[in-house]
Amino acid sequence: MTRIHPTAIVEAGAELGQGVEIGPYCIVGPEVRLGDNVVLMSHVVVAGITSVGAGTRVFPFAALGLPPQDMKYKGERSELIIGADCVIREHCTMHPGTVTGRMKTEIGPNGLFMVNTHIAHDCIVGHHVIMANNATLGGHVQVGDYVMMGGLSAVHQFVRIGHQAMVGGMSGVEMDVIPYGSVMGDRARLSGLNIVGLKRRGFSREDIHALRNAYRLLFAPEGTMAERLDDVASLFAGNPVVMDIVEFIRADSSRPLCQPKS
Image (tube, rainbow, N blue to C red; front, top):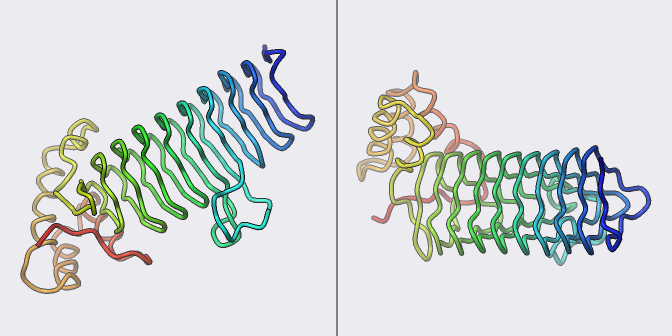
């Protein structure tokens, strides 16, 4: 049964699934869609063309779907799509897309977005992503599945974070981060592989060994990056985990690749 606190405002046109709970002083806009069993605890604002997936819980003072912080935004009817079973903690902000991007921001299921996290316009965030307190994404950022971002970290616009990567706390990420990589630092540099995360996710010893060997070859001092990338692609052609990194590097990007300190 849907429960709406008498102090909440749910505007006409909003679509509410079964078992939705809307707590005190929440505001839900007329073009919002809340899936089954979504919980808005209190003082939550959900605005714009925003859909929230089933089972997602939103804590007090989160603001979802309000206009993006982009000087070029002129009120276009863009979207914010939030997946199922996410946990969105206090003061979290998520913004819809813009005409200069994809016209939508997408956040996958099963994410944990801690206090004061921010996801800007046109971002694509994978599933099972964790953003610790005060972690922020600039516009057009792409974040792969199972990425972990430490507290107070920040990602520059248009950067790609490969899946299973780890961003250390207080890191400023200006360059693309390879899948399975670990970066840290004021201006983040690649510090190795996310070995702890790989073990926790159940990657085999063989795959971790292959990733280590590929990493050493890829970031060796000899030759050019293009030459080393071709060598890795040839030597590990039968290993899909290593090839994830190869394909990531070969993909088009407007940002340079984050590499270890020389």
